[in-house]
Image 1: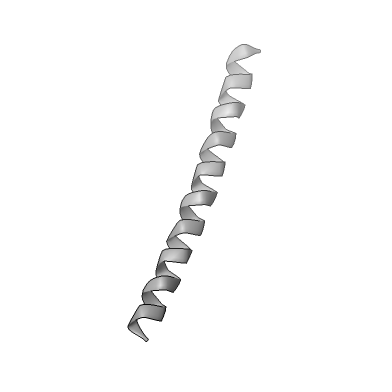
Image 2: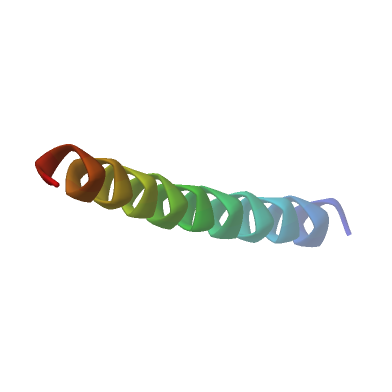
Length: 37
């Protein structure tokens, strides 16, 4: 039970980190486009 819960938490954390990275990259691209314009 404990191991399954830990694995689930790791997967959830990983998904959150991946989503955060995508959002950060998107924000950087948007900021760059604004600065270039």
